[in-house]
Image (cartoon, rainbow, N blue to C red; front, side):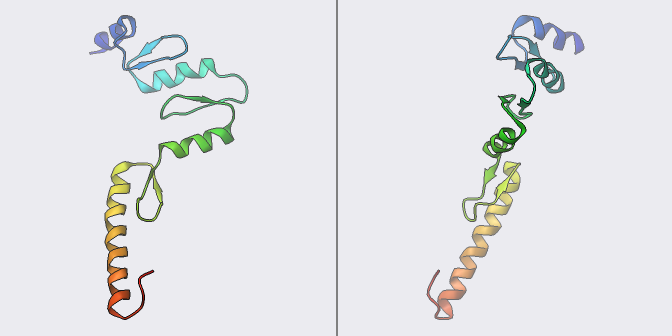
Length: 109
């Protein structure tokens, strides 16, 4: 297995390939470690998509693009499965709340 992973770094079949120099890695942690060699002072590396951004503040803003928003309330989640679970219960809660408002004579908000 280790030999197969090593060979992949030389044959262009590596799972992770550096977009800057072409070096391939089969393991994410090795790819992240390699990508740090391309950073200049003050830059930051996204550990999700390996994009290099200009600052830690830019990284915080960039990371928002990797979150999954709830279609009902807008709350954001790192994992899609968490958003789906939340989204279903959030939608049901909102539906029930609107039915209660309708049945009590209050207009739907």
